[in-house]
Length: 120
Image (spheres, one colour):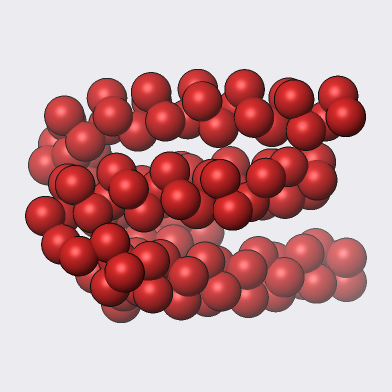
């Protein structure tokens, strides 16, 4: 129960942070896209593939934390889709599909990263 409450408060905090990020999206997109870190570049590739702004890349790590804590992934996804839809001015159902596909790709690279680190 405590983990669920923690993840709910994290989702609320993330929602406020996401609102702030979209106010500075262009600047943050450019910054995130120029990252020298290979992992961040992989995430940017995924986001671009699905038509999602690069500035939300850090939130994909939040997805992993919330999931690992047994948190409400559906609430997180809904919050992300609502804000992405408003920012992109696109139909929420279309954004939801792209978001789910991007998350699936992210989970795949995250699994690969974990597999590689366990081999070392």
